[in-house]
Length: 138
DNA sequence: CCCTGATTCGC
DNA sequence: GCGAATCAGG
Image 1 (cartoon, chains in turn purple, cyan, blue):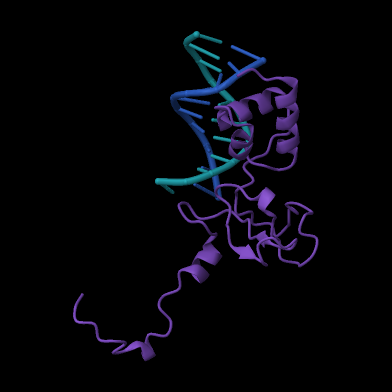
Image 2: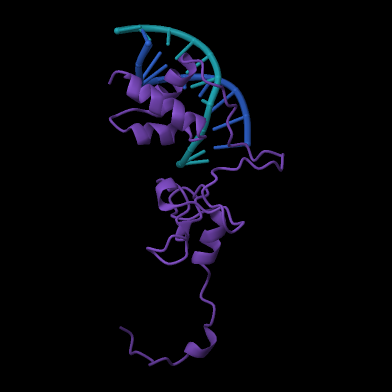
């Protein structure tokens, strides 16, 4: 696939938007790999970014997007949600404030580490479940 | 293992 | 110029 002006523009835009190379690759689709994106970006002389994925000892916020203006919670809309982002919902589906956590989800998980903890809590009230019906072994 | 960007190097 | 392979790092 050749890098058309259109694609390059999209690349620049997404890259500038802070999307990761792999995300941009997916966005562009058409068998574009993250390597292609990075390679092109590098070639275009786009700003280098020493792996933004370092837990960063810095407590500085990057302000991912100014989408979730309301609620201090940095949630994102469905449009900003991508494959490996936490899909922890917030609000009612259909509502304007229906958003998702959007943080990087744990590998293989639909949610981020924090929400996985919430989602996969161990059986809480096991107390009043005894003799529920005392089913005869299957 | 998951991921990130950076660089190399044959095409 | 392109991008897969590779490298370096979290």
